[in-house]
Image 1 (tube, rainbow, N blue to C red):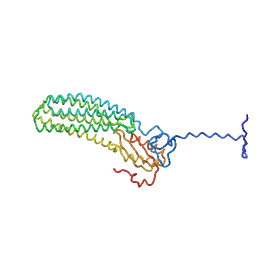
Image 2: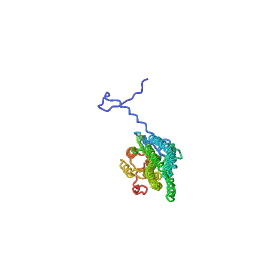
Image 3: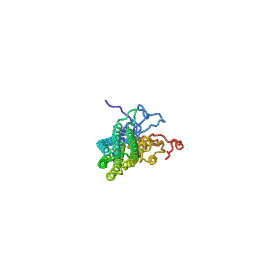
Length: 383
């Protein structure tokens, strides 16, 4: 059956043969399900497939179309780092437990408080390592609705408990040393003390090598290693014990050849207890910085802000917060007033992840207003 006929009136001077059928217009691509493809939205940005009400700016987690997400790709790397930390701690715990028993026996036979002090520090080291292992296990548990940041801070709490434990034990040993120095009623077997202290130096060196870790990597990938707080705490314990063991070795050498100088034993207890306490101060400082949600060490707050302001389209930056879940997991949250959300987010994401290696970044996008220039809450934080 012939189709319908159409009458076309051509303009004057145009022949029918010169008329070409118009090309079929191309199909328009399907509209994306979200205003910015490849983005993660938080809160009420979209609801049941419809746009949010006008004036409700979404909180956008940083991301790009190139597969870069608001979280770094270091999740697997962090798990691998925890596994390596466990292996180091298991090895150190075995060495520590074995020699702790031997040193306690040697200190008892030599009647040396300095060696018993070293054995007590090894006991503290062993306890701190077990606390660290427990903390690493707890921190690997997945987040829940109640603990929505996960259990990463357990690692920091374990390091804090480890530091406090050595402070308590050191205080007790200083008290016992003072009593011995005041009374003077004690004898020391120089030969047994010399052999035991020499073995203590060797064992502490082995433990230090087993726990040593470098911090040359970054937190953004599986290939980089940030020092683990628990391993670092255990390493500092071992360094403190090594210093004390060297002091005990020197004291035992003196006592072996000059038994009348037995007061060197409690004096060494005082001196090296102070050194051990001093080595824990840096760890305590870092732990308190994380617990108080301060800006992580090595992170330049002003540099982060200036980089965001340098992004094309950013009019203002405020409510910038930088903190850390652990020493290796820095986080960022910021409000930026922008003109083009998609372009700004892509460039801001690339710059932040490339320069500062944040574990998680969250950006709240909002329209720029002149009121922000004078708003107290939008001003730059003081140093």
